[in-house]
Image (tube, rainbow, N blue to C red; front, side, top):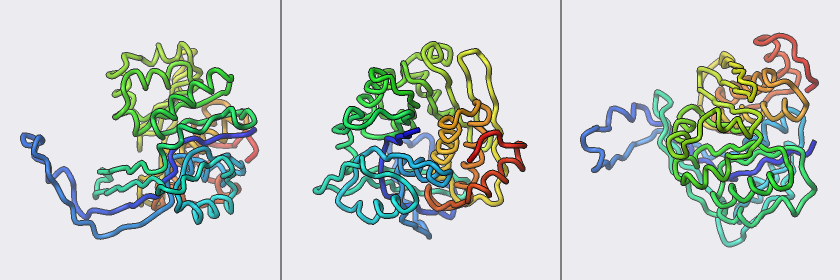
Length: 314
């Protein structure tokens, strides 16, 4: 199956703050908020939601197609992705811009403060699924907001099974933009906080979303995830115990990679969620969204240690 991962392509600048952000926030002076945190570590990593998802899919034996826009500094990143098994032929390279960049500081409780520079990402709106062979499965992840709405509409009109994953764009998107992406998608995935924002902005409920969708997947960090189905069934997926906690950046993207591996191979929803949970823990144990590594044999062994026999072939 041709799998498309559409979304941001970025470099991540990940910083560690040896304290707690909350200790420096004065609730009754939020209108005058002005804070600076001295960090003692920084890593520059390859990132962006779409390549992070594609990376985990490649580790699991797929050759996903990356669908997004990158800048003039993409050359080394493209080489890395092709080496691990990601198809970058549909990446639009914008020569007069830099690749989008994510600047994120994490404190000792894994709370995060982040900024995102869009760069070449804005040009993703010029990409179209009409310019390629019809894919079997697409995930539309955080990207240029106009691109996200356009790509969701193309999936609906072309009959492409797709996952809508608004992520960090929920906060800045209007109710109309959110509705345009969500209503009619096959699967909606977000975390519990993002879903609360979606409900508040759009008035959409889980029941109304499931009128037109197969599933609503809500991730809950260390508490795992819940897959809500049109039938009314809720499938609760536990988090896989970690050997160590290193960095939460990219954990949700790895979850999506595992989930999509299951969907592309016809697994039931519970197996899909469990595959996502195993992949997420691998990412949690490393810095960034593309530093974890496993063989398919190692992944299967860890899956079966936590959930019993895996019914699909990796």
